[in-house]
Image (cartoon, rainbow, N blue to C red; front, side, top):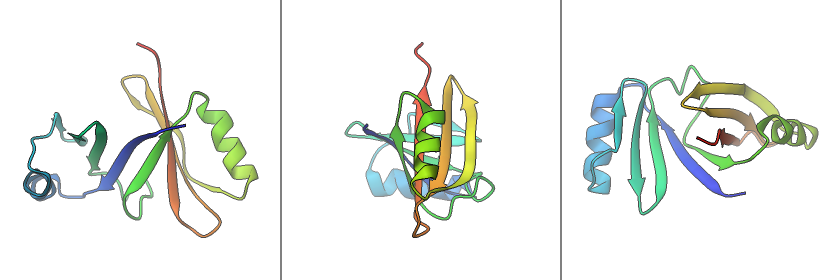
Length: 114
């Protein structure tokens, strides 16, 4: 399993995008009303304007998995709590957001082969 994406909730995308452009010294590769994506040395970092609605309480690391439903079930069985169930977010990408027993958020993501 590998770290796939780090997502930062950002209710107001314009100032957040301007801030991270400056902080990271790079332009986003994707800039839409629902996601702004940056690639920093191969690491995907995205801004999510719907993060609060999606249950995010801060930045979340999403880990890549081949079987999202099975991973969510395993993590729940280990004491995790589902915050956002498996959700298709477009482009063949699905994700889920959970908390560990201490309340820390962790995400899992899968992408259909295209």
